[in-house]
Amino acid sequence: MSDNERLLSVIENYLALAELPAEPELLYAPIGYSLAGGGKRLRPMLLLLACGIFSDDVQQALPAAAAVEVFHNFTLLHDDIMDNAALRRGKPSVHAKWGRNVAILSGDAMLIWAYRLLAGVPAVALPRVLETFNGMALEVCEGQQYDMDFESRPKVSVVEYLHMIEQKTSVLLAGSVVIGAMLGGASDEDCRKLRNFAIELGLAFQLQDDLLDSYGDERLGKAIGGDILEGKKTYLMITAMSRADDATREELRRLLADATMLPAEKIGAVKSIYDRLDVPRLTEQQIGLRFERALGILSTLSVGAARTESMREYAAGLMGRKK
Image 1 (cartoon, helix red, strand yellow):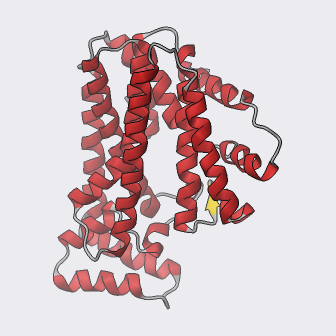
Image 2: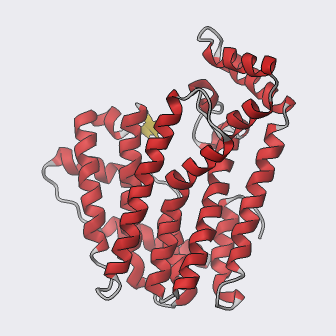
Protein backbone atom coordinates (compact mmCIF):
# COMPACT_ATOMS: atom_id res chain seq x y z
CA MET A 1 0.00 0.00 0.00
CA SER A 2 1.39 3.41 -1.00
CA ASP A 3 1.56 6.40 1.37
CA ASN A 4 -1.34 8.03 -0.47
CA GLU A 5 -3.44 4.87 -0.21
CA ARG A 6 -2.77 4.81 3.53
CA LEU A 7 -3.81 8.45 3.78
CA LEU A 8 -7.06 7.70 1.96
CA SER A 9 -7.69 4.84 4.38
CA VAL A 10 -7.18 7.24 7.30
CA ILE A 11 -9.80 9.59 5.85
CA GLU A 12 -12.29 6.78 5.25
CA ASN A 13 -11.85 5.48 8.79
CA TYR A 14 -12.27 8.96 10.28
CA LEU A 15 -15.49 9.54 8.35
CA ALA A 16 -16.77 6.07 9.24
CA LEU A 17 -16.24 6.74 12.95
CA ALA A 18 -18.31 9.93 12.82
CA GLU A 19 -21.50 9.00 14.63
CA LEU A 20 -24.72 10.47 13.33
CA PRO A 21 -27.82 10.42 15.54
CA ALA A 22 -30.32 7.70 14.72
CA GLU A 23 -33.31 10.04 15.02
CA PRO A 24 -34.96 11.69 13.27
CA GLU A 25 -34.12 9.04 10.72
CA LEU A 26 -35.25 11.03 7.69
CA LEU A 27 -32.81 13.81 8.59
CA TYR A 28 -29.70 11.74 9.25
CA ALA A 29 -30.07 8.61 7.10
CA PRO A 30 -29.64 10.60 3.85
CA ILE A 31 -26.41 12.11 5.21
CA GLY A 32 -24.92 8.69 5.90
CA TYR A 33 -26.15 7.52 2.50
CA SER A 34 -24.45 10.47 0.78
CA LEU A 35 -21.12 9.99 2.51
CA ALA A 36 -21.14 6.23 1.91
CA GLY A 37 -21.64 6.78 -1.80
CA GLY A 38 -17.97 6.61 -2.64
CA GLY A 39 -16.20 9.34 -4.53
CA LYS A 40 -12.51 10.11 -4.75
CA ARG A 41 -12.27 11.95 -1.40
CA LEU A 42 -10.32 14.41 -3.52
CA ARG A 43 -10.72 17.45 -1.28
CA PRO A 44 -9.74 15.84 2.05
CA MET A 45 -6.83 14.11 0.33
CA LEU A 46 -5.54 17.42 -1.01
CA LEU A 47 -5.96 19.01 2.41
CA LEU A 48 -3.96 16.32 4.20
CA LEU A 49 -1.31 16.21 1.48
CA ALA A 50 -0.90 19.98 1.70
CA CYS A 51 -0.54 19.74 5.47
CA GLY A 52 2.03 16.98 5.01
CA ILE A 53 4.21 19.20 2.82
CA PHE A 54 4.98 21.35 5.86
CA SER A 55 4.38 19.04 8.83
CA ASP A 56 4.74 15.37 9.71
CA ASP A 57 1.64 15.59 11.91
CA VAL A 58 -1.36 15.36 9.59
CA GLN A 59 -3.66 13.96 12.29
CA GLN A 60 -4.34 17.53 13.45
CA ALA A 61 -5.85 18.28 10.03
CA LEU A 62 -8.35 15.39 10.03
CA PRO A 63 -11.31 17.43 11.40
CA ALA A 64 -10.81 20.00 8.63
CA ALA A 65 -10.42 17.25 6.03
CA ALA A 66 -13.72 15.72 7.12
CA ALA A 67 -15.34 19.16 7.10
CA VAL A 68 -14.47 19.86 3.46
CA GLU A 69 -15.70 16.41 2.42
CA VAL A 70 -19.03 16.88 4.21
CA PHE A 71 -19.36 20.36 2.71
CA HIS A 72 -18.61 18.99 -0.78
CA ASN A 73 -21.28 16.30 -0.40
CA PHE A 74 -23.74 18.92 0.84
CA THR A 75 -23.20 20.86 -2.40
CA LEU A 76 -23.76 17.70 -4.44
CA LEU A 77 -26.99 16.95 -2.61
CA HIS A 78 -28.39 20.41 -3.34
CA ASP A 79 -26.97 20.43 -6.90
CA ASP A 80 -28.93 17.26 -7.63
CA ILE A 81 -32.12 18.98 -6.50
CA MET A 82 -31.44 22.00 -8.73
CA ASP A 83 -30.49 19.79 -11.69
CA ASN A 84 -33.34 17.33 -11.01
CA ALA A 85 -30.70 14.58 -11.23
CA ALA A 86 -32.05 11.13 -10.47
CA LEU A 87 -28.64 9.48 -10.05
CA ARG A 88 -25.45 10.25 -8.14
CA ARG A 89 -22.44 7.94 -8.48
CA GLY A 90 -24.63 5.27 -10.04
CA LYS A 91 -27.18 5.25 -7.18
CA PRO A 92 -30.47 7.13 -6.71
CA SER A 93 -29.81 10.68 -5.60
CA VAL A 94 -31.08 11.68 -2.16
CA HIS A 95 -34.03 13.67 -3.51
CA ALA A 96 -34.97 10.79 -5.85
CA LYS A 97 -34.85 8.31 -2.95
CA TRP A 98 -36.42 10.35 -0.13
CA GLY A 99 -38.02 13.36 -1.78
CA ARG A 100 -37.14 16.99 -2.31
CA ASN A 101 -38.00 18.33 1.16
CA VAL A 102 -35.96 15.66 2.93
CA ALA A 103 -33.01 16.37 0.63
CA ILE A 104 -33.13 20.11 1.30
CA LEU A 105 -33.22 19.69 5.08
CA SER A 106 -30.57 16.95 5.15
CA GLY A 107 -28.36 19.16 3.03
CA ASP A 108 -28.81 22.00 5.50
CA ALA A 109 -27.85 19.65 8.33
CA MET A 110 -24.73 18.56 6.41
CA LEU A 111 -23.61 22.17 6.10
CA ILE A 112 -24.03 22.70 9.85
CA TRP A 113 -22.21 19.43 10.54
CA ALA A 114 -19.30 20.59 8.37
CA TYR A 115 -18.90 23.64 10.60
CA ARG A 116 -19.12 21.48 13.71
CA LEU A 117 -16.28 19.34 12.35
CA LEU A 118 -14.28 22.43 11.48
CA ALA A 119 -14.44 23.54 15.11
CA GLY A 120 -12.17 20.58 15.91
CA VAL A 121 -9.07 22.17 14.37
CA PRO A 122 -6.44 23.59 16.79
CA ALA A 123 -7.85 26.74 18.39
CA VAL A 124 -4.88 28.90 17.42
CA ALA A 125 -5.50 28.20 13.72
CA LEU A 126 -9.31 28.33 13.77
CA PRO A 127 -9.88 32.04 12.89
CA ARG A 128 -7.76 31.85 9.71
CA VAL A 129 -9.15 28.44 8.77
CA LEU A 130 -12.70 29.64 9.27
CA GLU A 131 -12.11 32.74 7.16
CA THR A 132 -10.70 30.61 4.34
CA PHE A 133 -13.54 28.08 4.60
CA ASN A 134 -16.20 30.81 4.51
CA GLY A 135 -14.67 32.50 1.47
CA MET A 136 -14.44 29.16 -0.31
CA ALA A 137 -18.06 28.28 0.51
CA LEU A 138 -19.39 31.58 -0.79
CA GLU A 139 -17.42 31.33 -4.04
CA VAL A 140 -18.80 27.84 -4.65
CA CYS A 141 -22.33 29.29 -4.39
CA GLU A 142 -21.37 32.07 -6.81
CA GLY A 143 -20.05 29.49 -9.27
CA GLN A 144 -23.26 27.49 -9.05
CA GLN A 145 -25.30 30.61 -9.78
CA TYR A 146 -23.17 31.41 -12.83
CA ASP A 147 -23.66 27.83 -14.01
CA MET A 148 -27.44 28.21 -13.72
CA ASP A 149 -27.31 31.62 -15.42
CA PHE A 150 -25.48 30.07 -18.38
CA GLU A 151 -28.38 27.67 -18.99
CA SER A 152 -30.60 30.51 -20.21
CA ARG A 153 -27.96 32.52 -22.03
CA PRO A 154 -27.66 32.02 -25.79
CA LYS A 155 -23.91 32.64 -25.78
CA VAL A 156 -21.16 32.00 -23.23
CA SER A 157 -17.49 32.74 -23.91
CA VAL A 158 -14.59 30.40 -23.11
CA VAL A 159 -13.28 32.97 -20.62
CA GLU A 160 -16.64 33.12 -18.85
CA TYR A 161 -16.85 29.34 -18.71
CA LEU A 162 -13.35 29.01 -17.25
CA HIS A 163 -14.22 31.62 -14.62
CA MET A 164 -17.37 29.69 -13.72
CA ILE A 165 -15.63 26.33 -13.28
CA GLU A 166 -12.85 28.04 -11.33
CA GLN A 167 -15.46 29.13 -8.79
CA LYS A 168 -17.62 26.02 -8.90
CA THR A 169 -14.81 23.43 -8.87
CA SER A 170 -11.35 24.91 -8.35
CA VAL A 171 -12.01 27.13 -5.34
CA LEU A 172 -13.11 24.15 -3.23
CA LEU A 173 -9.83 22.42 -4.06
CA ALA A 174 -7.97 25.67 -3.42
CA GLY A 175 -9.65 26.20 -0.05
CA SER A 176 -8.81 22.64 0.92
CA VAL A 177 -5.10 22.91 0.16
CA VAL A 178 -4.79 26.33 1.79
CA ILE A 179 -6.46 25.10 4.98
CA GLY A 180 -4.17 22.06 5.00
CA ALA A 181 -1.10 24.22 4.44
CA MET A 182 -2.14 26.60 7.21
CA LEU A 183 -2.53 23.72 9.64
CA GLY A 184 0.91 22.46 8.61
CA GLY A 185 2.48 25.81 9.45
CA ALA A 186 3.05 27.12 5.91
CA SER A 187 3.92 30.75 5.28
CA ASP A 188 1.42 33.13 3.70
CA GLU A 189 3.48 33.04 0.49
CA ASP A 190 3.42 29.24 0.30
CA CYS A 191 -0.34 29.27 1.00
CA ARG A 192 -0.82 31.71 -1.88
CA LYS A 193 1.24 29.50 -4.20
CA LEU A 194 -0.67 26.38 -3.21
CA ARG A 195 -3.96 28.15 -3.86
CA ASN A 196 -2.78 28.87 -7.41
CA PHE A 197 -1.63 25.24 -7.74
CA ALA A 198 -5.10 23.99 -6.80
CA ILE A 199 -6.87 26.46 -9.09
CA GLU A 200 -4.87 25.19 -12.08
CA LEU A 201 -5.31 21.55 -11.06
CA GLY A 202 -9.04 22.07 -10.61
CA LEU A 203 -9.38 23.62 -14.05
CA ALA A 204 -7.47 20.71 -15.60
CA PHE A 205 -9.65 18.24 -13.69
CA GLN A 206 -12.94 19.83 -14.79
CA LEU A 207 -11.85 20.21 -18.42
CA GLN A 208 -10.84 16.55 -18.42
CA ASP A 209 -14.28 15.68 -17.00
CA ASP A 210 -15.87 17.63 -19.87
CA LEU A 211 -13.75 15.74 -22.37
CA LEU A 212 -14.40 12.31 -20.85
CA ASP A 213 -18.15 12.89 -20.84
CA SER A 214 -18.05 12.83 -24.64
CA TYR A 215 -14.91 10.79 -25.35
CA GLY A 216 -14.50 8.48 -22.35
CA ASP A 217 -16.20 5.15 -21.78
CA GLU A 218 -19.05 3.95 -19.60
CA ARG A 219 -16.70 2.35 -17.09
CA LEU A 220 -16.43 5.87 -15.64
CA GLY A 221 -19.85 5.29 -14.08
CA LYS A 222 -22.00 7.46 -16.30
CA ALA A 223 -23.31 7.22 -19.82
CA ILE A 224 -21.18 8.86 -22.49
CA GLY A 225 -22.62 11.92 -24.15
CA GLY A 226 -24.82 13.04 -21.28
CA ASP A 227 -23.65 16.64 -21.57
CA ILE A 228 -24.55 16.67 -25.27
CA LEU A 229 -28.01 15.23 -24.66
CA GLU A 230 -28.65 17.80 -21.91
CA GLY A 231 -27.40 20.62 -24.13
CA LYS A 232 -24.90 21.71 -21.48
CA LYS A 233 -22.50 24.53 -22.24
CA THR A 234 -19.26 22.64 -21.62
CA TYR A 235 -15.78 23.66 -22.71
CA LEU A 236 -16.16 21.45 -25.78
CA MET A 237 -19.48 22.97 -26.84
CA ILE A 238 -18.37 26.55 -26.21
CA THR A 239 -15.11 26.00 -28.09
CA ALA A 240 -16.99 24.43 -31.00
CA MET A 241 -19.42 27.36 -31.15
CA SER A 242 -16.57 29.86 -31.12
CA ARG A 243 -14.67 28.09 -33.94
CA ALA A 244 -17.61 27.18 -36.16
CA ASP A 245 -18.75 29.16 -39.18
CA ASP A 246 -22.36 30.38 -39.27
CA ALA A 247 -23.67 27.25 -41.04
CA THR A 248 -21.96 24.84 -38.65
CA ARG A 249 -23.07 26.86 -35.64
CA GLU A 250 -26.65 26.67 -36.84
CA GLU A 251 -26.28 22.92 -37.41
CA LEU A 252 -25.11 22.48 -33.81
CA ARG A 253 -28.08 24.46 -32.52
CA ARG A 254 -30.46 22.38 -34.64
CA LEU A 255 -28.96 19.13 -33.38
CA LEU A 256 -29.21 20.17 -29.74
CA ALA A 257 -32.83 21.28 -30.15
CA ASP A 258 -33.96 18.15 -32.03
CA ALA A 259 -36.01 16.07 -29.59
CA THR A 260 -36.80 13.41 -32.20
CA MET A 261 -33.26 12.13 -32.76
CA LEU A 262 -32.12 8.92 -31.13
CA PRO A 263 -29.59 9.68 -28.35
CA ALA A 264 -26.74 7.78 -30.01
CA GLU A 265 -27.41 9.52 -33.31
CA LYS A 266 -27.36 12.97 -31.71
CA ILE A 267 -24.17 12.25 -29.75
CA GLY A 268 -22.46 10.94 -32.89
CA ALA A 269 -23.49 13.93 -34.98
CA VAL A 270 -22.29 16.48 -32.41
CA LYS A 271 -19.01 14.63 -31.86
CA SER A 272 -18.48 14.59 -35.62
CA ILE A 273 -18.62 18.39 -35.58
CA TYR A 274 -16.28 18.48 -32.58
CA ASP A 275 -13.80 16.33 -34.49
CA ARG A 276 -14.07 18.48 -37.59
CA LEU A 277 -13.34 21.61 -35.55
CA ASP A 278 -10.39 19.97 -33.72
CA VAL A 279 -12.12 20.46 -30.36
CA PRO A 280 -10.79 17.29 -28.62
CA ARG A 281 -7.17 18.20 -29.37
CA LEU A 282 -7.65 21.80 -28.25
CA THR A 283 -9.26 20.60 -25.02
CA GLU A 284 -6.40 18.18 -24.39
CA GLN A 285 -3.99 21.03 -25.02
CA GLN A 286 -5.73 23.21 -22.42
CA ILE A 287 -5.78 20.33 -19.91
CA GLY A 288 -2.06 19.75 -20.38
CA LEU A 289 -1.27 23.44 -20.02
CA ARG A 290 -3.18 23.75 -16.75
CA PHE A 291 -1.70 20.55 -15.34
CA GLU A 292 1.88 21.57 -16.15
CA ARG A 293 1.29 24.99 -14.60
CA ALA A 294 0.06 23.29 -11.43
CA LEU A 295 3.14 21.07 -11.15
CA GLY A 296 5.40 24.03 -11.90
CA ILE A 297 3.98 25.93 -8.94
CA LEU A 298 4.86 23.06 -6.58
CA SER A 299 8.50 23.52 -7.57
CA THR A 300 8.47 27.09 -6.25
CA LEU A 301 7.49 26.24 -2.67
CA SER A 302 9.99 26.92 0.12
CA VAL A 303 10.51 23.21 0.85
CA GLY A 304 12.64 20.51 -0.70
CA ALA A 305 11.33 18.54 -3.66
CA ALA A 306 10.92 15.43 -1.51
CA ARG A 307 8.24 17.16 0.58
CA THR A 308 6.02 17.69 -2.47
CA GLU A 309 6.49 14.22 -3.98
CA SER A 310 3.27 12.77 -2.55
CA MET A 311 1.25 15.73 -3.83
CA ARG A 312 2.83 15.37 -7.29
CA GLU A 313 2.07 11.66 -7.33
CA TYR A 314 -1.53 12.26 -6.30
CA ALA A 315 -2.09 15.01 -8.86
CA ALA A 316 -0.63 12.85 -11.61
CA GLY A 317 -2.85 9.92 -10.65
CA LEU A 318 -5.87 12.16 -10.53
CA MET A 319 -5.28 13.23 -14.12
CA GLY A 320 -4.39 9.72 -15.29
CA ARG A 321 -0.83 10.80 -16.10
CA LYS A 322 2.69 9.79 -15.28
CA LYS A 323 4.65 12.24 -13.15
